[in-house]
Amino acid sequence: MVVGTIPGYRNRGLASAAIGSALRAAAEHGYDQASLVVDSANPTGAAGIFARAGFTAKMRYVRWALEA
Image 1 (spheres, rainbow, N blue to C red):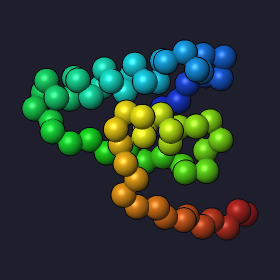
Image 2: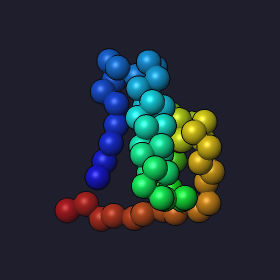
Image 3: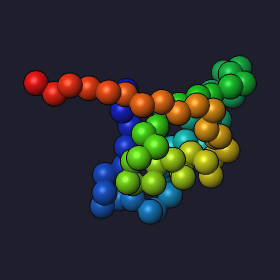
Image 4: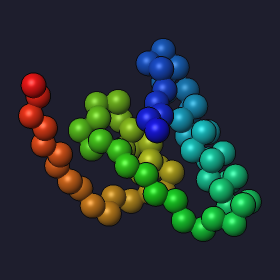
């Protein structure tokens, strides 16, 4: 699943609120860990949003593709 914020709604705290809500719901259901994948080259600042939510980068990888 890919999740994002429409450009016109960015910088309003919506992503942070959604992450917080998801983490609270997970904790209420007994989960004690969360992980995600983000494109480190994403120009929208997604990595920063997750870092502010307390996530830390554990690994980075490069994916290669040959376009037809």
